[in-house]
Length: 220
Ligand SMILES: C[S@@+](CC[C@H](N)C(=O)[O-])C[C@H]1O[C@@H](n2cnc3c(N)ncnc32)[C@H](O)[C@@H]1O
Image (cartoon, rainbow, N blue to C red; front, side, top):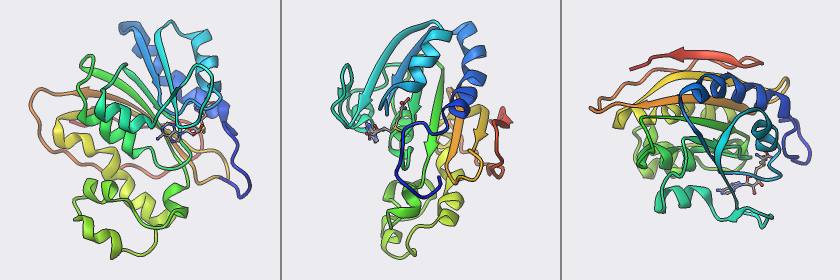
């Protein structure tokens, strides 16, 4: 994202396009139950609810906002569980706490959609989080050994984070990525399926280019 004050949804059309790509086929065989984990001004889901038949919608935000549960959504998922099959994590920094919690939670069915915004958090906040190190198979004490986080480190750890679910039997069956022009922010849309029998499968994600791009299918 270019330097300057953060504004919600500077790239709203791109975020919507990414979501539509996955929602349209998913909605043919699933009731949409949405957890908007970083709801903010709800611009994404205000638009999408006009286009898709959303059976249930629940909004979370750390900030006090009308009609929104004021709570850390990662903590909610860890402690309460998943209340939907469409998990939207449109944060400013790292979406990994919510994503990892969703991967470890019980799911309402065998498939879910997840939308992630990977912002500049890791590039500006200093150390790489212990959760990210764990996803890459590193011990927590590396937290203090690695240099301060950078975009390069963010992207090295990215594929470990995205494929973390493979460790506990989750397959990424469809993945799309988009990135606003001139921005380091990356958007991901994933369709995930849970296998009955776990086996670790790790595969590196392709590099980013602007516009929603298909990243791969049936990885398991
Ligand atoms: C980019 S804005 C979201 C914009 C929103 N998706 C929309 O459609 O208008 C990011 C929001 O995520 C919230 N947020 C960040 N981390 C969070 C967390 N762990 N739990 C809940 N909300 C969080 C912030 O307070 C902020 O309002």
